[in-house]
Image (tube, helix red, strand yellow):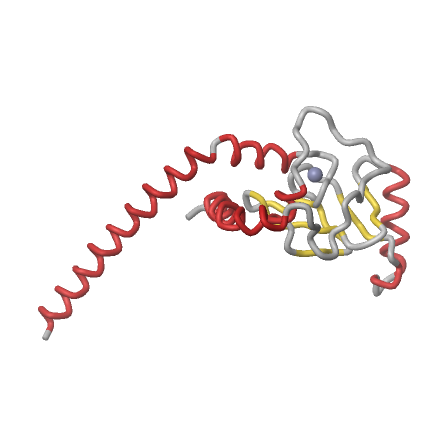
Length: 169
Ligand SMILES: [Zn+2]
């Protein structure tokens, strides 16, 4: 299964749990990390539910690979080397669109094999959510067919192994 396929499968499996969790917040995840930055127009914003499913890690320094922005924590105690944080502040001052500071860790997870940062202003995660949700019936039909096909192939392989074993006895 491709990473994107695995991602869709994980999303669908988590959907039931996530719906039950709707209204609650993922522990430790702040709701609005980017209030100081304008969000990019054009892409739909991903929902809290989608981020709740996608984000399973946090980092003091992480690049959103959906757009190339660097997100970093301003919590100096988290850095072994204070110069690193000062350098990030300087880069943010030079290019505030590409360097985004957070009071705490940036939360993120993988989407399509890329690091997707929680509520990054690129909004690119919203396109994945829209695709998955809008095409959910197609995706479910595909997963059902693909799973059945894989299952049949595994059964054929298992029979071949059994036949080879009994021929060798
Ligand atoms: Zn981004």
